Length: 76
Image 1 (cartoon, rainbow, N blue to C red):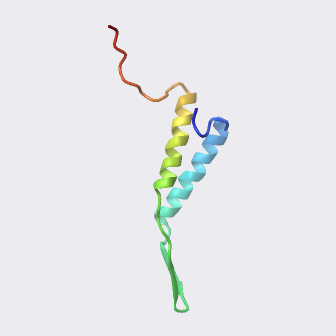
Image 2 (image 1 turned 30 degrees about the vertical axis):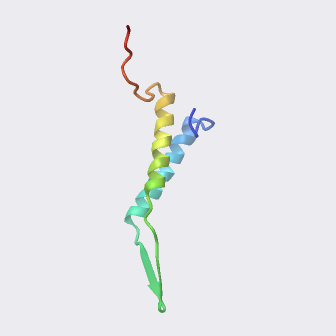
Image 3 (image 1 turned 90 degrees about the vertical axis):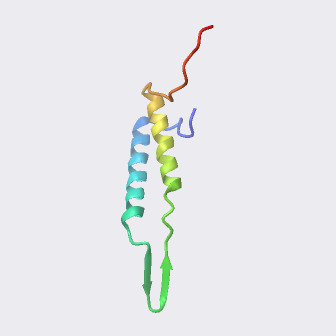
């Protein structure tokens, strides 16, 4: 059971869409702004967003029957 097990597939797809839009925004938006002798710089920390997208993808794959690939089963 993943962190997103209580959400429906529709909600998961919507969350993934919002996270992908947020990731795209962070990667394409300016990272610094300034004016009147002041400036601010924004961090482009995308690792957390990518981890959340991966968790949502894993939950969607698990529900569709394409769960995590496990190693081979050996019969002795």
